[in-house]
Every structure is written in C-alpha cells, then in structure tokens.
Length: 482
Image (tube, rainbow, N blue to C red; front, side, top):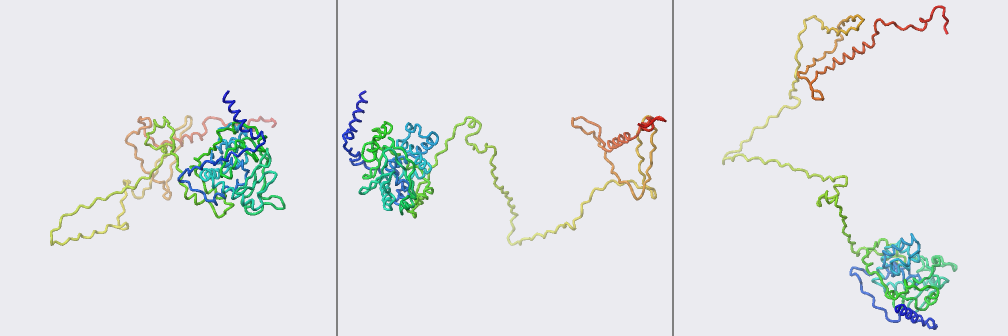
C-alpha cells in the first residue's frame, strides 16, 4: 500500500506544472552522459558521405518515429520476429511481447516494420552506426534535412510541422492524434524541387497512423541524441498528451535509460546489398567496407548423439560411406621394379672384350610352317568300279492288322551323294544325371527317328474301319432332297 501511495504522489508531483499552466522544463536540460567509446576494435567508421547515403530513406521521418527506428535498428533479430508476428496476428498483443520497447513501438506501424524487415542488411548497418557513431548519425540527418529544405521540399503541411531552429530542423506531427509517414525519392528530394504546380510529385504521405503511448522517445538535436520523454515536455508532446492513455508498459522509470544492443556491431553485413543506397552521393559506395570487413567465423557443427550409430559404426569411420553409396578411391598405379642384371665375372687386364655373335633372325610369319592339323582315321578302300551303297532304311514297326510296308531301296546317284556323317563316339562311361544317379546314354538321332515314326503312324488310316458315307450316299432311292 505504501508503494502505491508513493507512486501516486510522485506521479502527481510530476504533472503539477501542467495543471498550473506552466510550461514544463525539458528533461534534457542537464548535460547528457558521455557517448560510449568505440565498442569493437575491428569496427570501421562510416564516412560522412556513406552516412548520408545510408540515412537518406528515413531522414525526413517525424522526430518521435525516427527516434524509435534508430534504437530498434540495433535489435535486428527482434525486428524480424515482430514482423512475423504482425503478419500472422496483426497488432494484437504486441504490447505484451518480450521485445524491446522501441521494437514494440515500431510494430504499431506495419509499413515501417516491413521496410526494416525486408532490408535487414540496411537495418543492421543503421544499428551499427547508431551504436558506434550516434553523433555522426544525428549530424548526417540534419545535413540531409537542410538540403531538402533548401530545395523547398521540407515545409509545414497539414501532415507535419517543420520547426527551424538555429543549428537544427525538427519535424513534428501536425495532428495531436495522428502522424503521417512520408514517402519520397532521395535522388530528387535533396537536389531539386519535388513539386510541380503546387503538387508534390516525388514527395507524398501515407495513411494516417495513430499516435499512442508507445511513442515515448524523441530526438534531442541540441545534444545529438535520442532520449526518453516519459510524455513530459512541450511541442507535439503537450498537444498529444491529453489524447493518450498512460500505462506502465511504456511510461516507466526503468525506461529513463535508453537501452541499445551493442552486439549488433558483431553481426555480418552483406555490403553488396547496400550498393543501391547511393542516391545522395552516387560516386560513393560501400565496397571499401566489404574489403575491410573480417571474415565471418563459422560456428562448429553440433553432432546429435545417436546411440544406434555410435554402437554400429566405429568413431573413426566416416559416416559418408553409409549413405547408400560408398566412395570409390582410385588406387595408386603399381610400379613393377625390374630386377637388376647380375654382373658377370671380372675381365683380366689386357684382355679385349669378346663381342657375342649376332642373333640369327627367326622365321617370319610368311615363312613359318603352318601347324599340322590332326588327321582322322582313313576309311577302308573301296574296290574299283564299285558304287557306294547306302544302308537299307530302317523297317517301321508293323501296325496290328496291317501288313508291313515294303522297304524301298534308294538307287544311289553318283551326281548326288549323301553327305558323310562322321561316326559318333559312344561314351565309355554312363553319364550322371542332375540327381546324381547313373542313366543310359542319350542318342539324339534315335530320339529323332522315334519322333518321325510316331508322326507317320498318326498320318496312316486305320485298317478295317469303314469310311463315313457322304450325305448323298445315305439318301434312299426315290427320296426327295430337302
């Protein structure tokens, strides 16, 4: 109970000047804390021209939104997570997410959030510059605003209020309840007038977006920093204070110190993707940073323990050989060493070397005798004048009830002699069949002759069987045909 009373008392004392009509004193009247030194020794500062190219797309944003974008750019991972959440669920429960307060504030403006998420390399580079070169970042934004104001493109409109002070230019929301995000072409706005006939052609505003309690940051241009307002102050804060509902999610003493993610400087950046951000200084790029950037270190692979693999495969055996195909390693060519010749006996001194006789050339293929083929056994001599006779044809087995056919002797013709069939050597041993038992030798000619006999018997007509009469023979005399 005492803590609640103390909080109410402190809250009422803080807003007592507003109730009396007095203008509140700015919260940044005291000198700001010193900027932190360079975080990483390997960080290479951006030049002024590179900062102008990098910050040109957001230099003309309203101050409360610009302050949130600069701080949220240091939380790149949370920006990506917030964009996924908004695409899936909209802005429901955004205030309750465990993101940084600046990321939750940007999540209320989906167009700005998606722009930062679609260009993560650019977002990372902006966050790195704000962590290590915050003063140079604020100076670059003021330089760009001065260029746009000199061309007549940065003026007060129903959507924004431009405040020109000695040394800096502020942009506030003109409406106490809505702000407008400008859309412009940096290659035109900073160099020539962006309107024709009173109508802006390269400079426009998006839809009206609500001003909420989440806009708890603002730009302190006199000290070149972003600070926490706590919704206390003049200008646009005083106009919008009565239209918001203060809650502890965004108005809290713990937010008085603006927290930034300094580890963003260790995040690698694809500087080749930043080549399109060169609208202000077209001859200045980011290639020099890509050459000086340290090579990203690859995290060691984490092997998931698998007891089945560990049990079946030795630890020194590579697993790639068990992925369905084994690697084939080409074998080294084998070298056959010839035996060294044995040295001959020593020659006595004074004796000349005897030259061996020349080797006689061997027979050539043309003069080499042909190998003799084995000759078959000679046939017995036939008496002169006797013709070669063929063996009588084998008699067919007579069919019961039919006389055996007479064997016809073929008259041998000298002109057409039957081919001589070589004698088939009968096997001396009985072959073994597939089942390991002995059987009778198989004669293919005898089997062929038995097949011919069977076919001839099928063609012969059986004896003693009357032929069937035709239809005309069965008709009786005097019977009419149907």
